[in-house]
Image 1 (spheres, rainbow, N blue to C red):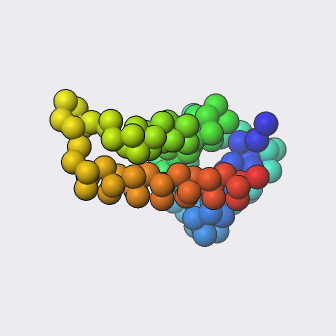
Image 2 (cartoon, rainbow, N blue to C red; image 1 turned 90 degrees about the vertical axis):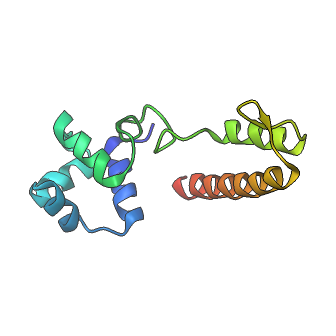
Image 3 (cartoon, helix red, strand yellow; image 1 turned 180 degrees about the horizontal axis):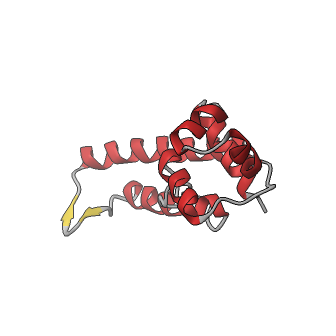
Length: 124
């Protein structure tokens, strides 16, 4: 299982931010954030929410309860939607999508799926 500290360090580094930068945004000492990232200490609920906000990830992701950082559809959900598009059975509410709309959405979903797969590979 991935720890809270490793997730906090990962997302901070992914954003290209220093510990000092994050500490200033949170108004906490550098040693406190360092302790979180090294799993020596755990953030209290208030700080956890602030971390979630500045990193733009869910609290559940930080805590390791989910793999998706932003409560976005899973790769499996995206694949299912992509398959529906390819089979020309996708709809927007009650309206059937035109061929050009379906093609456009297919390209978008393929790009999103590839990005998610690349990010998963990078995390492991």
